[in-house]
Image 1 (cartoon, protein in one colour):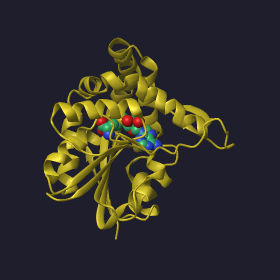
Image 2: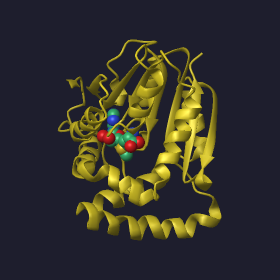
Image 3: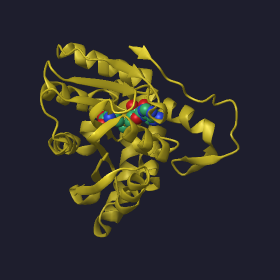
Length: 257
Ligand SMILES: C[S@@+](CC[C@H](N)C(=O)[O-])C[C@H]1O[C@@H](n2cnc3c(N)ncnc32)[C@H](O)[C@@H]1O
């Protein structure tokens, strides 16, 4: 596994603040706190995903992969790829003539991903790196994806611009992320997120706080139209999005032209 992470020194306060769930924290601290969350949940991450979403995350990811239009021979970058769900699926699509890079800032998540790839007999390059400073030259990929990762990033605008930079002209970025659920479902969704999720986190992983952060970070994440505007500001063109499961998640797609 290549470690190319160039995370800023969290001990040197920038003076700027940002959100970590519902808390306001020093910018430098957010990355450290996000790292603690994912290191804590890494071993049980996949089983929790199935339990929390009743398996729906598999359908959301399958939809994203179909929408990507990735074909044999393509080069794909999976940003914040964690335990490698998307990378695994893309590896099958691109075949021997293509290439998929699994990347993430968190070593524990990537280790799980690497183990899952080995179990399935799939070999692909893995790099530990920050989405805000991708260690790839301009125009390297046909497709870049980020699934449930953008929400956790400190400077989403910088990360989006980086993901655009490494796309070839005509290449596309797909962002799969929690979004704004349709209004009538809100009360039920709130009950589920703020009561049941932390309870499940405590029972299964022994960590209620990480799943409380999940619920809070979803509420802090830009809704569908706002994220579309952010992608456009980052230089992506023809941005559109698809609501899935009544807006619980949305897939945004944009092109580098
Ligand atoms: C909820 S997991 C998603 C994993 C995987 N993409 C999936 O859909 O199952 C979010 C991932 O984002 C990663 N992450 C958070 N901030 C990041 C950053 N600045 N750069 C790269 N990865 C980051 C975390 O380490 C974590 O593995």
